[in-house]
Amino acid sequence: MSSDLAAPPFSAPQVYLIDDEPDILQILRDVVELCGLEAHCFSQADDFINEIQCFEGSNILILDLQMPKIDGIEVIRHLAKMENSPELILMSGQDSAVLSAAENLAVAHALVVRGTLEKPLSIARLRSMLEPQTAIRRTKLTGDLKSAARDVSVEELREALDLDQFVLRYQPKEEFAVTGASKYSAECLVRWQHPTQGLIYPDRFIALIERQGWMPDLTTIVFNQAIRQQRQWQQDGLQINLSINVSASDITSLILPETISRLLADNELDTTTITLEVTESELMGELTTSLDVLTRLRLKGVRLSIDDFGTGYSSLLQLFRMPFSELKIDQSFVSKMVVDMEALAIVQACILLGEQFNMRVVAEGVEDLATKELLAELGCQVVQGYFIAKPMAAKDLRPWLALQLKP
Ligand code: C2E
Ligand code: MG
Ligand code: MG
Image (cartoon, rainbow, N blue to C red):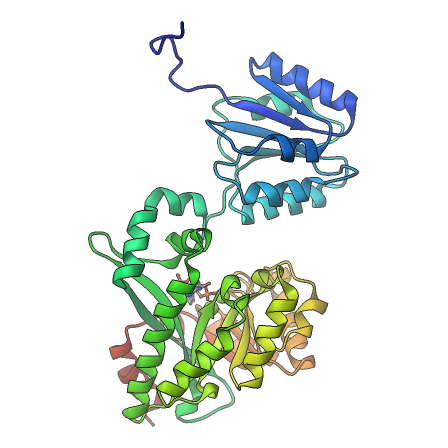
């Protein structure tokens, strides 16, 4: 008879092993068992995928990246879709760049990576990674599904969507070469006005919304607010292009172009008054559908922008087949370009690419004058960031613009 009293306070993790080399699998099993843990061995990733439908309790997966049929990267992609996925220890006989790329990919999918192991294996390193007190080495800091799930509940979020507890902030973008009112445009950034917790930023709820499949609801809310606000400004004599962030799931909806043009027409607004910002990594998936939707949006006159450029996984070729009119260099490069030669080289390469492909190049995350000046010198056309202005409420945008445009 099992006794609850005898149960340890924390149950030991189950350890899954996937490696196509039988000798290595045996060594791994020995080490895991030596640590007093239960090992489940698989010499083929597809057996693991077919057999394990869900995970309970705490689990660790030691995963070889190079395998003949399904490789480790495909396993990572599969785990990303599962609930309660195991913590990962990644292994490879290839150079360390492959391991760190796989680690970054896992982290980008909000998986927890305990560590990486190069082959030949260091038994001592593996043992230390299996110890219960091993700190979780890397988890995604922003947009992390796990932290989002910890913070806000699915029910609260559903209620927020049903009751429309979202507000928009507007962050100015400044164009170098232009004078007058059209020097500025603005990006709409959503916040959740939580009934008790105050203003909640997107990194705490966007990933969860995406996971629940509720992005169309949020996008509708954001579009309605942005377009209503733009109409109001236009009636008051302020013409300003607004950028709206859309996600992968929006881009795969074939009716998006019609929905947007109808909404704009109902509000007597021109399609050229909005820009859609799509994150580069999100274009990976259904390429033909995205291409269809994006092309029709462009045909209707909507401007399209690749957001967070340089951080995604799309190939350049794929990317430049898409009809983008604007490229936004990710803030992780912009914020350190003055002090970091590699970041500077990436920013320069992005500006050149933009020029070659006839795209407006925007640098986001500009936090000081030195960065702004360097960007102007390098030929970047538009800057956005705390140095220009922080995201602000709609009522503050007009006075801010008036101040900038004062002779
Ligand atoms: P993003 O579209 O790349 O937006 C830029 C983010 O950088 C914003 O964070 C902005 O507040 C912040 N930022 C701007 N200037 C600076 C700066 O100088 N320094 C630093 N450190 N940060 C700066 P925010 O508002 O928290 O939004 C985070 C992300 O959430 C956005 O990244 C976007 O991907 C997503 N998001 C925001 N609003 C929406 C929305 O309405 N729909 C969708 N689907 N995603 C949204
Ligand atoms: Mg954006
Ligand atoms: Mg961005």
